[in-house]
Length: 181
Image (cartoon, rainbow, N blue to C red):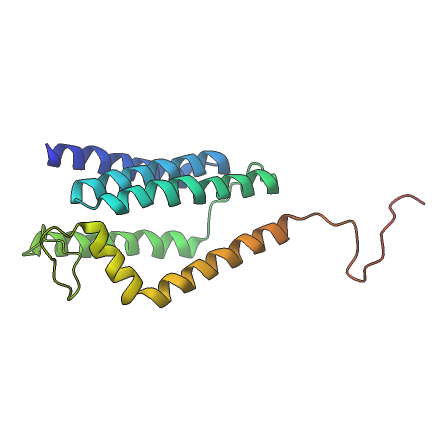
């Protein structure tokens, strides 16, 4: 049953990612990204990481995607112009993607302990200790600085989006511009 669920939601994840790339309208791309995030949350559930699945839905599929959607709507991004891409991107990009996928397939096929996933990084799992307690111990002891730096970077990104979206009727010197004479 786990294998069937994995294959179904991995297919949803890949389909959403491909749809994200081929969509020309930004809102449709954002909705495809939500499908990818929710599918990843189900894959986390299948791995037994309930907290990560809930955080994936709440933080990424909820908050971040709402922020993306509001920014797209605020900037009033319309239909993008289609280009054929550069010749170098087509001649180098496709073989590079094939090579990377071949390396990943080789690693997956030759992996000895592919099904083993452990959260404890040098920590001992006390009987009765849940995955959430173990994750919070790692997050707030060993990974505290990257966790706080990430929160500051997200705050800076939000402030930058608001600053870029703000419409002022003043020029850089501070005097009001007049369009009618």
